[in-house]
Image 1 (spheres, rainbow, N blue to C red):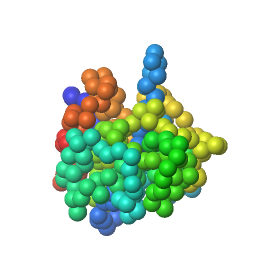
Image 2: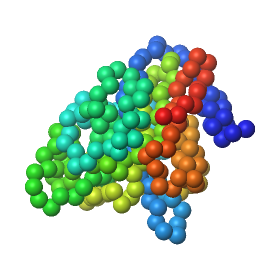
Image 3: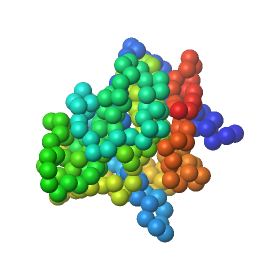
Image 4: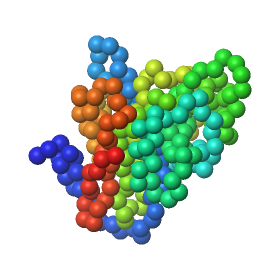
Amino acid sequence: MAMSDDLIERLNAVDRSRRHANVRPKDASTLLILDRAIGGPVRVLMGRRHQRHAFLPGAYVFPGGKVDAADSRVRLAGDYHPAVLEKLLHDMKGPKTLARARAFGVAALRETYEEAGIFVGCSRSGGDTATAPGLAAFAAAGVEPNLAPFRLIARAITPPGRPRRFDTRFFAVGADDIAATTADGLGPSGELEDVAWLTFEAAGRLQLPPITLTVLAELSARLESDPRLAPEVAVPYYLWRSKGFARLEL
């Protein structure tokens, strides 16, 4: 059985009783920050969702969340690689605009700060760093959001009949793209606890949502053949088709 077939089988094994009315998926994005120090295994930043959350309490996830309207109005220090932008525009549900595509990456940056206290972008020692209200902390830290290093590694849409549905883009950047961190190393939202750098093996032993485990497996396999994460390489796209998940490529 091919790895992709095994991953689809695991996703389809999750309860899909579809007890809830169908809702349109909301745009969301997630950021995988990879620490690839020479001589050591690849590590990824993850945190545990607070037990008070109604959605996935206690699960370990990558920083990320829903895209906000203001995310499309942020000034950027750099834009996506053209191949990444092309993938983001493919099969985009609703208005297909560049501003909306850029909002996916901005949301990932914003949520990473809010949940993990990490600023991904370009450090600026002076000059105007004004941004949208949701990224005011970036301006205060002297950091401009930068989408140039972003690599799309997966996309997944929650099946119908679930209480919450998201059309999620999974991005990756390197740890060297971190421009600053908060003084206490915490995000102001308090949504994630136990934020830590984990090897893929260690992460796989934790309580992970099925799609998170799937993305980790996809990324682990890709890094073996494409350690640079070349932007032109096709990426998996998981969506529900009739009676089960399908794995397409972007």
